[in-house]
Image (cartoon, rainbow, N blue to C red; front, side, top):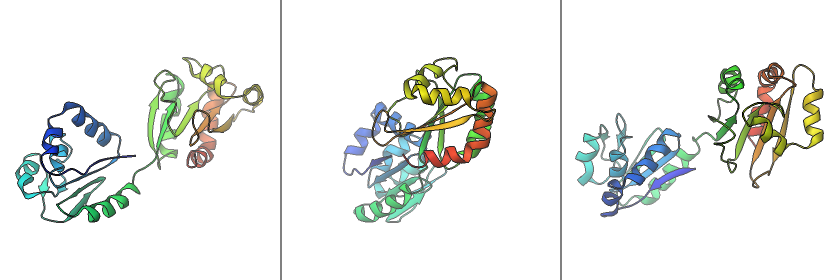
Length: 229
């Protein structure tokens, strides 16, 4: 997913005064998404405060605005700084090609669902093992079920709504596998549950310690499952 503002003329100046647009850009930046802007478009990124310490290009009339926002203005057709791509008019094709390369650098996002006890027990292993992903931790109540990749820590008896979520996802036979698992616990992958291109992995054991061992010992397999929705 990416946020792209390929506007020219006066439109970017109106967008730069829209608080909803600014919040959208800031959220995209926090989430580690790729962002592109061309011609006068970088003024929106400047107003959002995401160009500080970065190189950027754009129409010469906004050079001072970019500089005041902490960017280093450069007179180039296109510039890539991290996941931010900026371009000067009229080099739309050049920016599009550069932006395509930038998109390849964006890590896929994984939402990890856990209760307040299981989360700290597994957070470090999950972050280290899923280093190829942008990991976000959430609760069952806050989970967006249309996310492409979801990891659930805990079985049918887990507290704070995690167990209820697991019961919705797993068949009785799959739930029984968790209860009958040895001390290492198990992982169960489900696909196309709430929509077609989706993978949900449940890592669980008969208790939270077995769940913790399942996460620690099977984290490579978990990462492999999540890599292919």
